[in-house]
Each structure stands twice: as C-alpha cells, then as structure tokens.
Image (cartoon, rainbow, N blue to C red; front, top):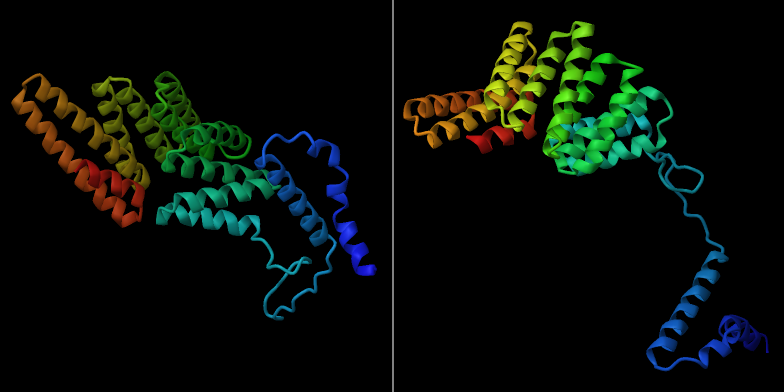
Length: 289
C-alpha cells in the first residue's frame, strides 16, 4: 500500500491536467506533454534528493560547495594579458569578460575593459570591441591618461574597420592630444600612426603615409619598439596601396619603388614582431609579404 501511494503521488502532476488532455487532436502533442511532465517530476525529485558530499584531498583548496575556488580578478587579468602573446583570442576574451564581471576596483575594471577591447578586435568581434573601446576610454580617463590614449587608439582602429572613418579620425586625434598633454613620445607616435591609418582608410593614402612616417621617426628617436612596430605595419600597408595606385596609373618606376618600400617595411615589421613575440602583427606582416 505504501508503494502504491508513492506511485500515486508521483503521478499527481499528470492527474491535475486531464481536461486539457481531451483537446489533443494528434498523438504528437500528448506525447510531448507527457514527456515534459515526466522530466519536471524527475527534476523535482532530484532537487530534494540528499547528496553525499565527496571527500577532497587536503592539498586541493575548495569552496563551500566542494568545488575548486574560482580564479580571482588578478589571475584572470594575467591570463588574458598572456593570451595576447600566444594569440589565444577566444580564451583571452573569456578571461577578460570574467574579470570584468567580478572586478570591484576601478583599475581592475578599466584593465579588463582594455583587454576585452583588444581581444574582441583581434578576434573580429567588432561590435563588442566598439562598445568596450568606449567604456575603456571613459574608465581610463579618470585613472591614467596614457592608458586612455592607448584605448582611444585601439578604438580608432575598430571604427576604421567598421567603416566609421570620420569617427576613427576624430578618436585618433583625441588620442594624440591626450598623449601630447602628458608628454609621452611613444604614445604620441602610436596615436599619430592611428591618425595616419584613419587617413589611409578614408582614401587619402599620401597623408596616411606621411603621418606614419612621422610616427616612425618619433618612435625611433624615443626607442619605443611597440610604437615602431605599429608604424612599420602601417607603412607596409600604405606602401602597398601606393604600389597599386602607381600600377593603375602606369607609373612603372614609382610602382617599383613603392613595391621595394613595402617589402622593406614588411620585413622589418615581421622581424620586430617575432622579436617582441607579437603573433598578431607577425601574421599581418607575413600576409602582406
């Protein structure tokens, strides 16, 4: 009798809905509903089932639920930063977003936003990169002007990739002004190169090439390898565009000179990227070569 009562209680859910069942016009619909009722019943039983906790090794730290503790903000940020070197954009983006979700300090949130911006941009998620760029620039402007300039430069590149060339130029110019106010030559070089990239993407290749040349001169004077790498990458692109323009205009000598410049800039860029361990720009340089 007790056994029968258990079964009856288990099927109370089905007994409560006899009237709607009478309206079914096909075999498929009641089959679906019966299966869902069964699943809900099993879920209800599992929620009230007593689970015996497993014993863990004393050397393995655990939280109150018995599982290993989640990584902290610092560890997530470090892993996301390391992913920039290895080229693991998806893992780095996931760590950056995880850090952003648990970060409490403004500095940690700003850093997580910058990493989200860079990983999303490198991974091709331009919509996420655009929003992260806005948030990162806003966060860093209250904390660190140089980091704000860096975020603005990256945001300018995202805008250019999205086709918002006017916004790209305005953002790059703002980045240069912020870096100039601080007096940081490396950041000025990177921002000036971003201005050149905006001009290049807008179709003014000559002005873009000129800005990137100035950026390279400033970066070499200051000995900033990352700024040099950024300028070389842009000069490789503008030289290739100049080569195409000269070929179309049937200027053989100018086309040959531009092709030689593109190869020279590309080789320098690839060598420096390999030295600095930057797989992203190394791949870009090798593709252009």
